[in-house]
Image (tube, rainbow, N blue to C red; front, side):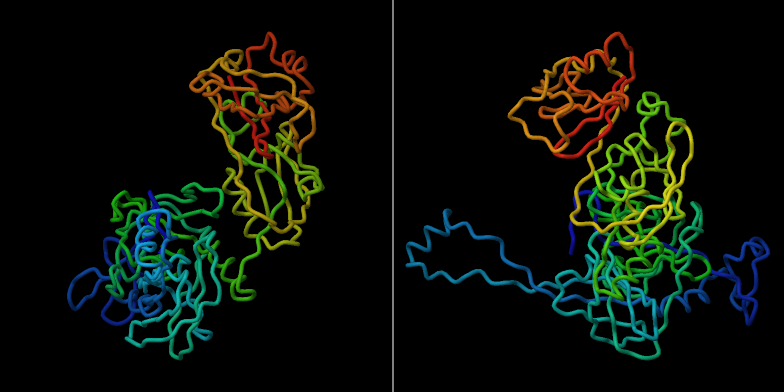
Length: 476
């Protein structure tokens, strides 16, 4: 099972009230009947969600995973080395140890026996056992998994299965009631309740694709891979993680929305793996200082900090300083949005990209290429309390040395050194950085750089190259 310092990968538990049912002993509550959320059992005189749960819980399964853990690498220079020499090198080798884990899954296609769960539930599994609500135990076959979204697809061979239909995750709103069904601590068909607390959560880490639904529902180990369902009984997410220091529930849980789940599942079903798109830009969020220094009209969108030569973005005409606000029909609010949107598009797809340049909104066609290797996107925070002319205090800046080889050419100035704790350090500059431009105007050498910042109060947007990547860094 995957481990994390801040996010315990133990799944999300959410609950929604049921739909009103007009037949039988159930009727709408006079108080909230128009909402269609709760129903009254007239025989007992109580509000209940039982009719809805009778449709949901049969599609949620328990997943029992058996595997083996590899022994840690052995250090023969330590005490064990001494023992080996003493006993003639005849100590037994460390053996793999069996492991076992529990999680949840959701049947999304009853006819084909397809079950979606979390990657961290089934990764490194030697055997997967699926237990249905009716107590049937089935062997599960892993079709494919995607660690970057934490989604996996498992198949079983069985008849008379129930399934959940996907809802449109774009229709989900903060405040919606939701239902989560899973198997926390091995307690099958456990139902908990809460509301949608937030949307579009990103827990950090450029290596993963995150657009989580956040909920306040109680979440515990074993809920991972379980169903997050709306009040219509439609699947809106796969429970994935909690934010916790102890590993227990603190009322902050996360689910992968169906928009991501359906895209990943489709590729896993067809190919057993996920191919991701790229367009060849460095992107970052817009800070207030960057907006001021670049004369931008909004804080929304993904700021283009670099465009790689020969990439789809370059061919489409994008430039450093453009603000991407739309891609493939989706609105782009920040850098995570564009990364998720591009990553979920199949390579070779031609689609629209919308961006703002010089205050004007533009749309062009772009053909998405395939990711060759994932590289972390360089980002920086603006430092608003450091005057521009003081931002370089503590740094030694000069022309690029002859013995320094750079990917981006020889134009620019080189940061020779930066004192720890200095204003330059606080502004984000580091030894070895190359400043390529000031306010989107190229810098050729030290004299050129000095003229760009001389007698100006700022703010400045510096295009800084670090380890082959560029970021726009703001100083004010």
